[in-house]
Length: 252
Image 1: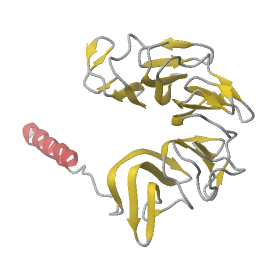
Image 2: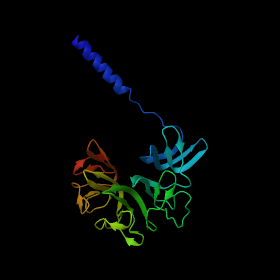
Image 3: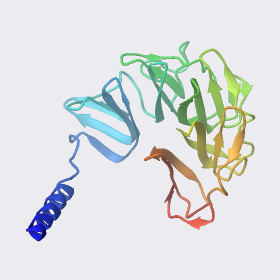
Image 4: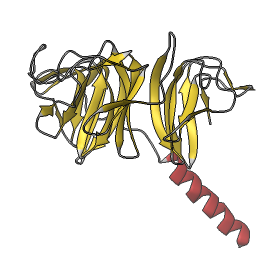
């Protein structure tokens, strides 16, 4: 009898396991890839090297999905690289001249960084930048932007800066030399940054609100993505060695 029960349980568990399948989400996205997604006000926002085309809608680079139907941003949204939520707004950072209908140059200054409130694009306090933004994150109530730039609003910032809602300030001098910040996330009360740099950590480091610290001995090549899963920090990129251990493109 026990054997029969155990066999039944095993078959039932296997059936549940194999019943977990992927399903397509509409048939509207084409071309290359979706690079980033963010949930905001019960809708899924996505961006990447993609094209939305269906039901009379057309958009390059970004799309909105409400669980049933796709929609577009008003005007232009091409070039967004990363999303985060800051002060009840969806923040979009990237490499774009303007968001929506705010043709560059204009008084609204929505290039490279913009707020989306669910209806309209708004300025974020950035009116000048000499490069692109690859990553946006919120840490200790402030908005952090990282990327490939050396100045914001004519002030010097090395690849990373933070915004408190009033002014931009330095993050302990940032990253020096020919380098780039590709991604950021918060883990165990600290802000982690990944990319291609040699100091203060080799392609990955962490910020505690005052100072930067290395994370182990780093990676042997670029860190492109960071996220937290089951209370552990996962890193993805084009590296094959992490902290002196063999790790093909992903490590924790």
